[in-house]
Each structure stands twice: as structure tokens, then as C-alpha cells.
Image (tube, rainbow, N blue to C red):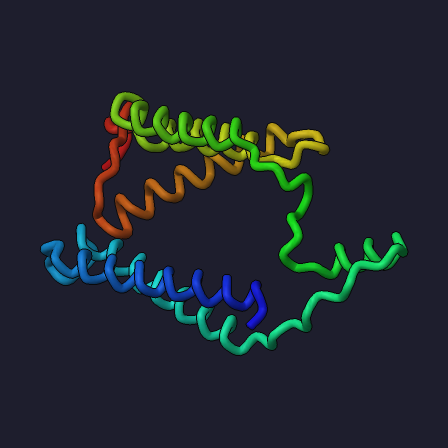
Length: 179
């Protein structure tokens, strides 16, 4: 069995098992049968189960790759082999730890800001900074587009939860304007 197939089987099985355990835990959360505190954990666990099963099935059906060929002295052949290797790291290959730490700090800042300034403003600030952080490094950052996207997405999420699901998110300074 090829190494990538084995990795796929392990990842699929782990996701499926995690989804099943999460579903069992989510079933313990009391709910009224509608959109409430138990709804989203159940939806999330069902998605994890489905994705785990699909990944497991695709990995199982994946044909075994042939054994690696002996390395020759030809540089062109080595380059082609490296391009064809699906397990080879993409891009630089080194993890970007500062971005991960900054993302975690942004999440913490979002949680701290949500109650005093409201969900819409906190989410817009968080999304704008996260989009900017995750923008490709070699290209100019489209600041206006990122700001507009962050405001539209955070506002849409707020109104979807408030009026679609009847779940209250902190309104902050927008509270006097909401009905």
C-alpha cells in the first residue's frame, strides 16, 4: 500500500471517528428540536462524519502508486520526479509560525472585543485583519475589497443569526437601531 494511500486512510478514519464521538457528545446537549444550542454541534458532527466517510472511501479506492524509481544522475528526470511526487511539500515547505500565532491572537482579540463593541464591528475587524494576513505575499493587498468583504460578511452573519435563527449575538452600539 502506498504511503499517500495509508495517510488518506488514517486521516479519513480519524475524522470519521472524531465526528462520531462529537455527535455522541452533541446528542447530550439539551434542545427543543429546532435551531437551538444543540443544532449546530449536531450539524458540525454530521459534516465531519460525512467528510470522513468520503475521504476514507476515496483513499480506499485510490490505486496504489508504483514503487519509487531509483534516482538517476539526470537532473531533468529528478525534477520531473519531484513534480510528480504528490507528497512533496508545496511552496517553501516551512511552516509560517508567526502567521499562526498572529491568527490565534486575532481570535482572542475578537472574543474580547465582541461584547463591548458588538459582533458586527468585532467580526468585521477580525475578518479584515485575517484576510490581510492570509493574502498572498507576492501580490499587493486589495485593502478596499477586503474591508468591504469583511463588513458585508459580518453583517450578513449577524442578521442571519438574529432574524433567521433567532439567536442573539451581541449588538453593541447597534442595539438602539435593531427591532
